[in-house]
Image (cartoon, rainbow, N blue to C red; front, side, top):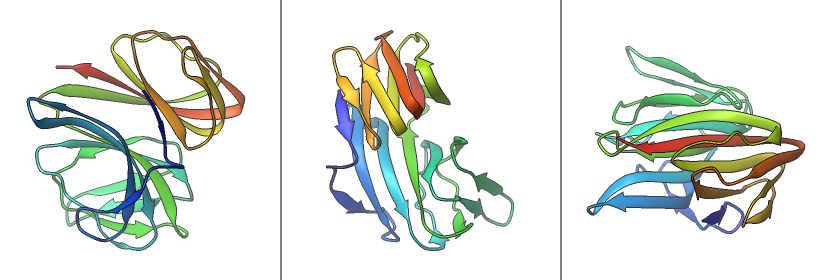
Length: 177
């Protein structure tokens, strides 16, 4: 399944503090198993909490930010996927202006999610569901064609794909529990 942040409609965050573009999602027995989105983070303030869910948060544009509360401090840095409990109440402090983050919110009772960053060259084979989101350059994926920045694909199994043009791609492997 191909998706694009370029055509996805912006929706308000759960807490109303910003906007996100939902890119793809999957439910199991009527419950969210996973959701992919691209968030615009334009100001300091609270992050939406998602009790019972886990998060992967990867800065794809801008300098990033710090997420914190009285006992937790997480540094969201460019192209360094951050994994954390989605139910924790956190405040965001921008590092140096607005940023964008590719997010995966998932239910750990249904799936596990493992993020990584890929550069130019063949995408390694992988079992299970694989999400590929193009940050820069391009991605040529079998059966999908060429993808550019802001576009991505959700594939099952080991579909052949190549990152090119000095590209950077966020990869997330999603496997059933």
